[in-house]
Length: 424
Ligand SMILES: *Cc1c(COP(=O)(O)O)cnc(C)c1O
Image 1 (cartoon, rainbow, N blue to C red):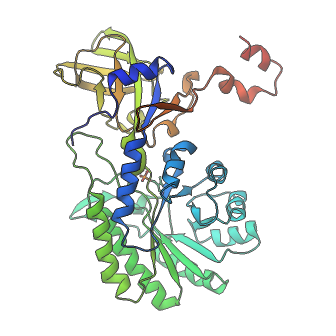
Image 2: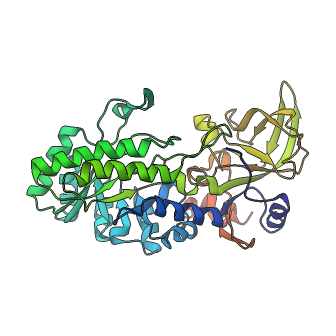
Image 3: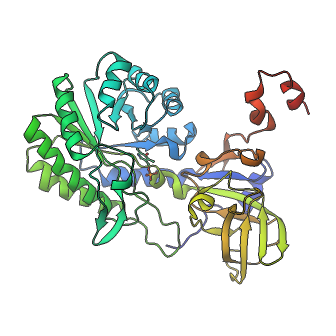
């Protein structure tokens, strides 16, 4: 898939004259078009709902765009629940897909009437302890183990993943929950991350639908939703083919007809918890070339670093880079594009062919809209950048300010030296 930025050099210059680089820029038009298509692709299912994985891009302004299309929030921590509450996403608009969960977070979710998705069978007791009694609607996370294969390609290794219950535990949990008065049941599973194939969701759906039929037949439980969770990926590399959400939706529909409808379970709602797919391509990290270095290799130093986008540093992940204004120039220079951390893994690109870069050029680092800003940290005392929303009419809006030293030192505010520090 050809990778073109959703913003021009001229627009970035305009934005940068108000808000200095680095910043994360988001494309409202792209976000809207994508969620519209997702909804269309699953419109055959009456109860369909997307719970946006808050951890991917925890910005209320962005999540509120998705809320206009009926999306809820998938949370896995107390602060994510707090954020959801703050934007009015409570009750059935919350899916709490947590793991290794502290008791007070179950309680916090239950107080908001959110749907609790149990990661483990022992959490039945934990929820009873935390909340007094079990909610009427509950979900369980399933991990069938083994490896997940699509036409002989191993996609991922659920048997190695810490999440979810085994098949036996899932059956036991549903039976216990039913005895304890739970009335509505859901099944959740997340087996592969960042898949760029139209087959993942349909295959996962088939597997979960078959388990659902068996659970209903053996235990007489009323399963009202099946949550296919996240995992639909995006083409980070130009040589990757993007997913076709309509083919995916149709594949799930076919499995639904063949399995659930045939078993008389035609009232089951399909839920998704997509993160990357919803926001990834619609966010870019904009950064400026500020240093060049000619030693054993050719280096371009930029004003962003792994603190702003750590996927390349921790996963060796590829993020495409466009030198703005030089889209049509030949890529005849080989660079390592680096940040300023005292860590040699702080490189946005290694041996990347790019047009000749001058100091002051703006680089657009693609596909940073999910698991980008949100993974940020403060190593080396680096501060997190701002987030800016590019609106469909070309105007732009600050949706999170950049951190200042005051934010960095805020947790020392109970010490005497704090005021001296922040007044420097
Ligand atoms: C991370 C996560 C998601 C979203 O994953 P993506 O790869 O961004 O789609 C959904 N559900 C749960 C429980 C997760 O942990």
